[in-house]
Length: 219
Image (cartoon, one colour):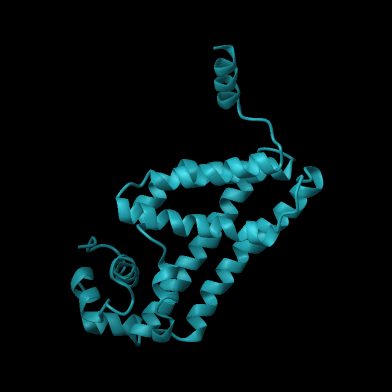
């Protein structure tokens, strides 16, 4: 049960988020949320007039955190280099470093639970998800467009599709993590994506990889 001192609205949202990711929105009843959150129907309906309103609040909060994390990690990556391609690599590396924690805390993407059952929520809620996904696409696409001007790839690449690949990598990684019960699998998937960008933009390998290559060539 969540701590009694947590504000009621946030306690309900925290509890409902875990249940929805685990069971899906359709199978998460208000009664189940009340029992797990340790609160009453009166308190619930004071904050959320309906289950649909709860769902909308869950998505709004998740989307806001999702976009905030995007901007936080991108800002940090932009501080590491003036080269947009290297910034993208640094951006993914930061997610690699945080992958274990993200996989443990999130257990799965809340977006999927709602998109798969979109008939149970209003269009306004789905639009919040779409806006967040498009925010990721726009931010990454802009950086990719900068990167190709500095490091033109040898073959034509659909940059919009590549920007979307970051999101699909996360979704696929969540499936692996949940199915095989191994949070570290997300780190590996993100590393593959980072290596692809390093190859695409023909960036030299990092110090550790360079050392390994030197050793293998010396044998």
